[in-house]
Picture (tube, one colour):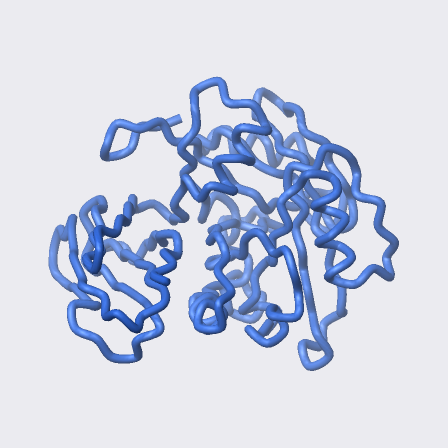
Length: 291
């Protein structure tokens, strides 16, 4: 657990991890050791169609999880990978279940339904609009830049979805499979929660978007009327994204930047921010609805 720029406790969490129970190359015990050594407080073990209950492995906190992938490998016919995080029991799902059925069952189990790596899956905002109840999506997925089509970043999906009124919490996850230095301990969320938070309290904090997604930098965003401010650890770039395709004050570059401000127009419907440090590591804010 770490304190942020404002002295608030933050949990370091990865919500997408694979083991030898499905197609990962390391056992659950080995995975827990890797993440514990890297300073993580919690991970979710999310093997394909293999529910893992909450608990502890080797002294590392584990949130219940599984990944339900459907659609094969042809994005032209629709590929959906949905994480069920924090379920109170194993979801009752057949291998023939569709994406909406998976989302609904995850919710019946009191879990979070996460649309994983939409850029990797070539998911579109039009596809997402047909699904009800997606709680979050991955704006960054580490393994998708480790030989898995080189589509780790889903910012375009996030923004086009928001233009259609679809607002999702934004996670950064590893989706680690290989554990060869390419996909493990690369991306995570920093969650605001009490030192002794229960699983339910951690899930509530995620639902309330009390976190930022990151590869290392720290980012905080706030809005006061038409002014949006980002505070962050020292970075070389701060960028704002909205439904405006051109607007002033949206891109800031320099050395050791720790703050940026932009003013939104009355017709803008959402805004979010990203920062990039001198090493190219990024962090992502939540999406703020403006209307």
